[in-house]
Image (cartoon, rainbow, N blue to C red):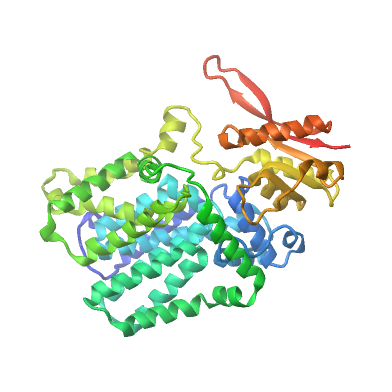
Length: 510
């Protein structure tokens, strides 16, 4: 295999045998790093919900009692996971292997997007970085609807690029279908449909109603199960309307700079972010080189979703997953400019950018250079203490036991691993969760048998402190007896001594 061949700036659209071997190698590396220890960590909050829905779809009755099929999002990923559950059983690995394959598909699709937008050099470097990028790997190893949405989102752009080169009606059907599948993964995926229509108008240089109709009808057809359930099933309709009302009334959870900071620290890291900024500055000063295919198309697929996420009051660490491939590609595209031909030893620069890009993010800097834990956001992490407590509850409490927890995260973990009815004292008015009108009466009437106090959550979510005090008051007032304690170990960096404190305590009412 000729190494220098892969550092050329060829923009040939044909795929050589050497390229096929390289793409397979990139896929295998991306899959290996994602599949490693895939089932080791317990589910986090969102994963427990989606896996619970998938188990319900696979007709496991014990999960149907705890997880309603109709909740916040459409069910495409949950349906795919349910097939995995049906054939291979319910566990963390069989749930997460689905998004792992999808994310590896994203890496391969991104290769072709980068090649068709820019050249082979950009395609190789950006796909290698994306396949190993810590943020992309971390999200890929979780059973999250953002992964399936992102897969069809990037596939949609690839089909749009192909349509730009050759206007065929078959590609229009594909564009509408992939936009619909993006929506069926997560409602915000509808922006894929909006961007597709805008792109078609720009490509055709006028509004061609026939082309737009083909895309629109394809989108409506593929998403018809969602709309049919909304029209015919009262449960689905009420669930959707309740979620719309709840989401529109939720207060902001981060400031307006959250995504900008997250991109530089976690998503891309400092080196790629610097390259991205330089690429945009370079673009501003080279307007004569602007064209639709390699400037406007990637700009639309980055800017519109980013602005959409930015205006939403609730911001999520994993929301940027769908545009991460485009950010990486555009950042690396700067290295494909004519200027690099004048750089001596450019091969070393191109090769060296890969480890620099991968190591220059908060996760590696904190954990490996500063010896600090990296916890990006409450709920995105998997806390093994929660699963251990849930397994104990399953093995040591009656099946009809009812449990009160501090936060919905612990409640969902208990529902998934214990199959016990669980209610959180702090639920943020989420319509999926049952509310207790009077906790005192519920305890006195023996409707609540246990309190689970997940102290480990308070350090990560300061908003839980008041509810934690309230939970402690119920324990004291009604003589809750601790029947299970899970300890968390800490290391004092000054004297290197290890000390412990309770992470999760289960109290029983006699």
